[in-house]
Length: 122
Image: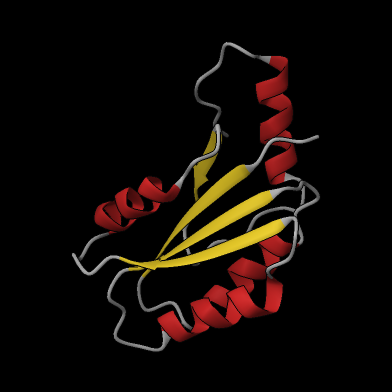
């Protein structure tokens, strides 16, 4: 069985971009995934979009959690998301980026190839 990769995504006023970002995560060829969307007190409808993404895409192998961080700033949002991580592996990702479909599997293969590594980057 594969280990869970948690992906923490701070979200601030990204209602338009977030569906594209989430589509790239849904398209990952690695499972199980846990996505933690952290709304950082958005003034648009980003929080609603986060909940919509949860409803649309969550399944047995893709768990999506939505949390809020009212203190402004990406660091505060990342730290809030990090509080929710309970898996061995995690990564931060930005709410306006997209992943290649093999991004997570490449990271997990790198961890498997280098079991003493604590951080993998590209």
